[in-house]
Figure 1 (tube, rainbow, N blue to C red):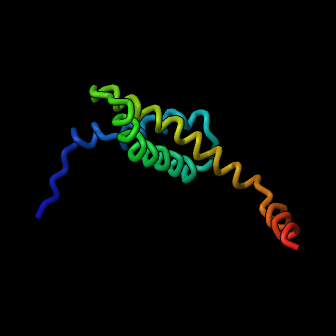
Figure 2: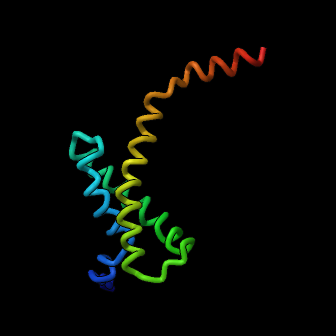
Length: 106
């Protein structure tokens, strides 16, 4: 059985719009290596593909074009948000937090 792949459907996907937004955001986001850049675009695409349909429904958007614009924006800002979260985790001093919790229990 041959898989039925519709290129027009793929181009009208929230995931594709999110990947395009993430590709634009690469100009402003960290990621020196190509592997990091590919991971950034993939994460922005996934965030857009999952979150933008919910936002479209929540805002009662009926126009598909505006829905794709929302997905583009979510992909663009989702990449920046993911980069900020990763940076915050890297800078988090987990040992001091755990030592503070253990010190209070005594």
